[in-house]
Figure (cartoon, rainbow, N blue to C red):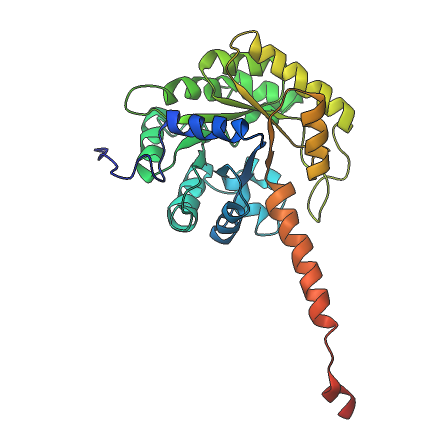
Length: 296
């Protein structure tokens, strides 16, 4: 595959790694938080961009989520995660967004792919960066042990971040981690932004019912993840995600009680936004006058 030079670099997708970082730091220089959003459809992406998000992240769970299924379906053997993310990007999101950088979720431990080769395809498609999703970082217990021992470990995700910085690839990276140790390793590998993942998002029609921790505990866990990464590198940006952090006020609390500078919303932004607005507008339509109904 021959990567042709992109004449639009610098004024729209795709952006270089340096350009994405410059945009994020400019947001912070204006005193605003960084907001990244998962998008499983083109219509979601279009209006999340209009709402002012700083990044769009495309991964396979977005398709399941916006089809009415739990986001955890993205971790199951219900499809080719890497192919689904590329398809959403190519045919739904990249054609409709105007300016916001678009990030591709990559399942780094897929044993059928040479990840360096897949990253070149991601870059060629017009994505500006990568995210490690599906991520095995949010799997624990015996199943996590099996994954680690049978060649499908989180280390593949960490190694991918190192590959993303190689000459000819040069992709921005924003990564999920669930523990301080993973955070430190991702920092050492060169991750640009670290997302402290504190569990599946609660709420809505297909979210979990019990958070993995309280909001206060989420802030503590998030700060521990931040400090571990900073012990390796001080120049990383940190965002919050998951568990009880599902509303703007929740995200504000984490920003105020940790060193995060923003939030990543997938279910909490895209899915719940659709659920709530569709319920409301459908109810409003059901309240309109219907004089002819009384004449039947």
